[in-house]
Amino acid sequence: MIPAARHAERRGRLRAMVSEAGPGRAMLVTDLANVRYLTGFSGSNAVLLVGGDPSEDLIGTDGRYQDQVAEEAPGLPAIIDRDTLSAVARCAPSGPVAIEASLPVGDERRLGGERGPVVVTDGLVAAMRAVKDPDEVALLERACAITVAGLAALAEEIRVGVTEVDLARRLEQIFGSLGAEDRAFDSIVGAGPHSAIPHHQPGRRPLEAGDLLVVDAGARVDGYHADMTRTFVVGADPDAWQSDIHGAVWAAHAAATAEYRPAADARSVDGVARAVIDSAGFGAAFTHGLGHGVGLEIHEAPMVGPRATGSMAPDMAITVEPGVYLLGRGGVRIEDTLVVTDNGPRVLTEAPRELVVVG
Image (cartoon, helix red, strand yellow):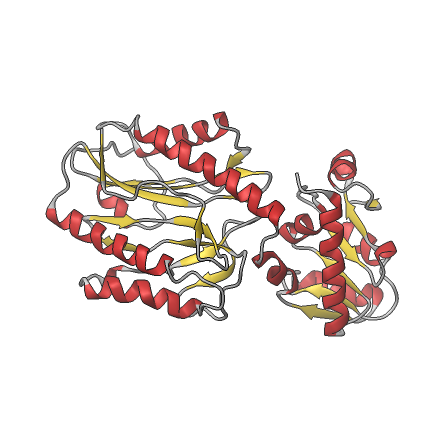
């Protein structure tokens, strides 16, 4: 668990950013992942007030979470009110108050009518969350270690005839047995032609000999998400076309991973992977961005893709996940979660990337 002092330090940094941006003396934080980042509270209803002074900080929720907020956000005054937003807003100091761009328009108008001027801000907390502190990296390491071990255990159980959905549920059971609190996202298990659907929802299709099998999954530990993908061949040696696309993806993965360094341009790094796949003749079959940040959400800043903006910085946790998808035939994706460091990328999901035959 991340200590309360770390959350207070984060609120202090946000306070300085709000003051520098000049929208007012206080900010209302309503995005639940941002509230958790700044307080530790993980309930499904919360509003945080970050005041001009630490003594003005407080959190609001409703009666369902009265005990939980006291446990998870110790030392932070709490307001318990079902109309949480209004109750917290009434405690804000006079003058304009900053709000997050994700707040629904109806709530924004209601706030303006109840207490006066509001100023929309965008991306302040997201920018903070993009760079991980040591506590966050440690949690990501645990989540990724469970993911690696879980996928290795699942590979031993894959057999011709088992269904996609059975494999997905089994993997999630393994994650729990290894200490995860939950899966990081809906596990993707796609076999045969379904492996060419990047976000395939596992179904009742049984695995057949010769299928490509894509497994994209992650464990979640104390709110932090892992993300990893490996591709297998079921019950037979791979065909030449399967080896060809796997080789292209693996080469793109290796070339792009080496570029995950401080100050690297995110769009250019995506271009490195895309050029490798394009040179192999599969450029049109790489249909998504190269990667995304991971942390309290499975997809968060920064994004790495053909329309990405910005550059990488030390301690960003980002995925690298090139893929090739031949619709109606099969697909390959190889994905790792890594941390950008001054000494190059540190991969947290280190595991074999060969086209392994299972079952």
